[in-house]
Length: 448
Image 1: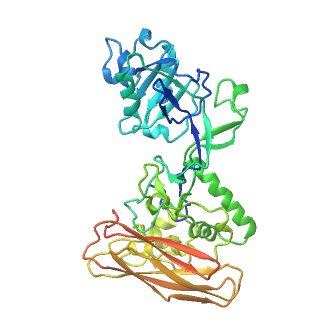
Image 2: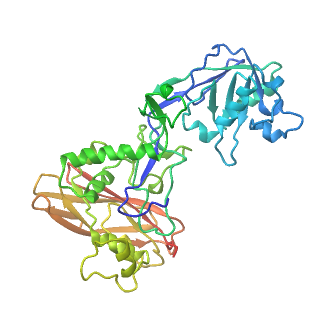
Image 3: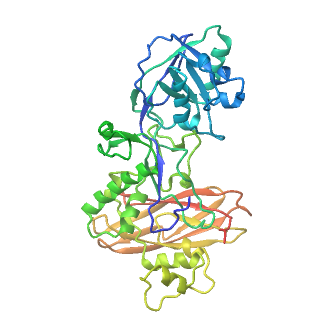
């Protein structure tokens, strides 16, 4: 994660509750779930010979190159009319599936089954009968091939699976925190749908295909480039209802109303199944409705941003070369440290270098935007065993709308050394609104 600046809304990518499934049917009647978008015209009965790429290798090629279906690695006589099993072509996960599919097609193969976890998580659009299965299911299909005299299979056309569970999950290509150069701010800020997103497509875009008339009117794309428009839409919605709100107020509304659970009611996970943390999803998955009524917002000021730059080691001369909005009389505090970044009025909290019996204090200021005038918010804390977290005061009383109130959070380690980064949350509620700020505490130091 490198987009760590507090004035940037940094967005992670998550999956949605829809899946594009293209299954493999084996001759022993077993069905292996696959992923991908294809309009396979193969028979639904498993009648096509099934072969591993390495079993069709040329005499001049290596077994490894044929195993991943590299160009010029397989014999056409062995591939023709068959479905070929190809494995990951990128060490650690991922495949150049376009090249693999083209190689099999050029040798007159009828289909491809790719074994690769990363590619299975994103529904690619295949022009030939092709699907991707997980490495977990790979041994089953390989066992069938190796134990059968005449292994056969077929690839079914894609079916759309709705209400897919669990979702959302953070996908493998989404950048993770922390940025080791600045541990005192949690990044990313938020997560939003970024996998298999169906949307309008520029039909006359000649850059996407040489034959512009064949360009689709809709497309399915994955990436954080798909997550960001979702957030932009929510920003526009919040701004339309609150035209006087600052960008930081809108950002706060989005972050403090985010969701940390999936559609099973369990904590959000990574696409591998392990539990996700704020370094994966930031404040959580964006809520389209919650951001419209946040109750309280954290407004980050110009001075906050300048102190952030001071904490990053910039002096006043350098800062003035970056921005023209330096107030008269402002200067960086002497011996500026990253603790100034922790005290920035941000919707999440990150504290570094918490060691021994030392306590660290951060200050936050919230603005009442709930529209209910006089109201009282009470705090609740979800803290890990390794850290004692005390909020002062425990109640915030507001007499009117747009009034500001401040509070302190004191972090004290309960162990001599924090062995790892620990996470928790601080939530303010008045019975109607819940305003959640996630936090991370570590004994680590930011890199210079």
